[in-house]
Image (cartoon, rainbow, N blue to C red; front, side, top):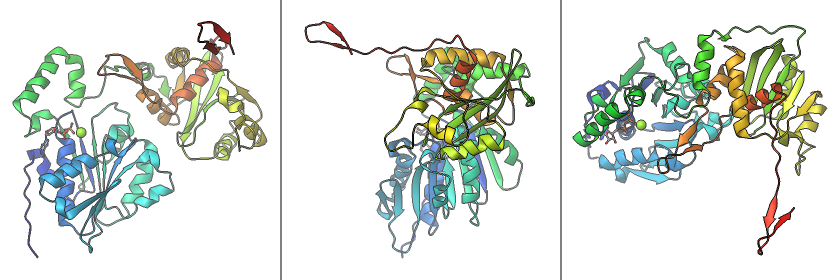
Length: 426
Ligand SMILES: Nc1ncnc2c1ncn2[C@@H]1O[C@H](COP(=O)(O)OP(=O)(O)O)[C@@H](O)[C@H]1O
Ligand SMILES: [Mg+2]
């Protein structure tokens, strides 16, 4: 059998990457070589270790195009190893009949808590863009991967907010012998040409406010396009994100957003005089209605149930509307909110964040969702455009609406233009 020696060039910081670490955290600014170095390291491990299964994960993977597959393929090709691998859909498999090694590319959004178990047997996981990882993903993934001897979890990310789940996890783990934490920036990337460095230096002069976050991997304090992040920082500075007690004898209000693959999210609040106390939050996907009804009952939150406008719709093949089903489960005090414009809802949500108190522990996941809620700038038109709403943010808009009785509702009219140009009501 011919012996193959591969020797890849890498940046100096990447020499530290080693299978002896159980956890590898690589964070930092854009263009520091995080993705490339991890892809090289994993390709080296894959070719030299028998039966090595590697899963490359993201929180949301809209399609295989949005995965790390391309970069791994590139490393395989650059290393002259293409003849040893075969690419099939969301996998790259080793071709040797006695070697079960493979790379799998998977979004957490496509996995239920049950089929996360399908990742058992993957010795190495690489979570890319880990600033987006949810607490739930971390919680389910860790025991699944770590059940194998010698397992390794790798996370790469550009830091966003200090209370993001990945930051908390990294801070809990750092300092242990089998944990590697590296903060790296573009100035430690051995592969950047002068052209790119000049471009980065120009960004530094022109957009100094963004520079520290984008290229030096500091937290994002500019909040471009983020609807609520700054207000949440102010709420925290005011001391309004703290331990918030439930007050006995005061009505409970819950506001729901309903989904299936998208989470169903519920905010729980009380109004005491003029003070709004937000005391709990739940957001879970792939769960049936009874799960949430049970949660409400177990916590004794069965007060006023605020539902989005489509909860009253009867759908084909369903046992009555969502509202009907909840009533059958004993959640009888329902109120279906009229349809509102998202913009009006966001204005009310902002006002609510400026005034409300949040229980720091129990509403943690909801606050993370609110923080990440944002619009995105279209590079071509320069205009801000909507992106998929964070689960949890819609439910918060509904809560804000419910609490504001004067909120503008939305009236929809439909019309049709006849070929002659006259308008016809429908
Ligand atoms: N090991 C490497 N081999 C070849 N090119 C690299 C390597 N590391 C970094 N680069 C170069 O640096 C650029 C930025 O690296 P990338 O991994 O995309 O950074 P990050 O993920 O930190 O934003 C890449 O486009 C690539 O040109
Ligand atoms: Mg990257």
